[in-house]
Image 1 (cartoon, helix red, strand yellow):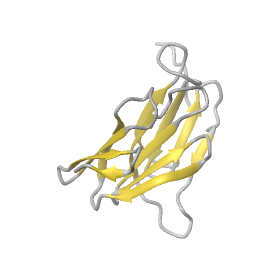
Image 2 (tube, one colour; image 1 turned 60 degrees about the horizontal axis):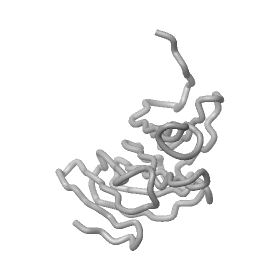
Image 3 (cartoon, rainbow, N blue to C red; image 1 turned 45 degrees about the horizontal axis):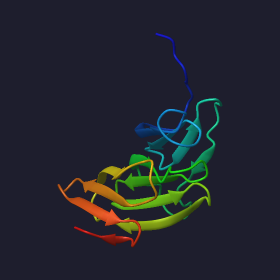
Length: 147
């Protein structure tokens, strides 16, 4: 029972975690992404105790609760994206290479899960589920919904 990594990751509850990378499963460094009640999305490299990327909520509005996160677009050593879903229905796609939001939408209900169709290929499709039993699929190549 040897602990490999421990860090105070958020100011409140951690709602979601996903992992990617390493030498056996995909490209890039082995990293974790967390989403928390504080509205932050953070990327962790387990070789250090500080977040390598912190995506903070907009200061002009009250922080929304981040309920779910997923890694994707990890098809080479340079590319990697994060999809995050929030309690107010916001869904945001962050490009970690450019450190920018590249796509966002609102699905009008709390987002319970987000997933890329595969982590190890270029952005293709993402799936979003909500509190109201909705399942939505978006094509990230064209960025249109296929409800």
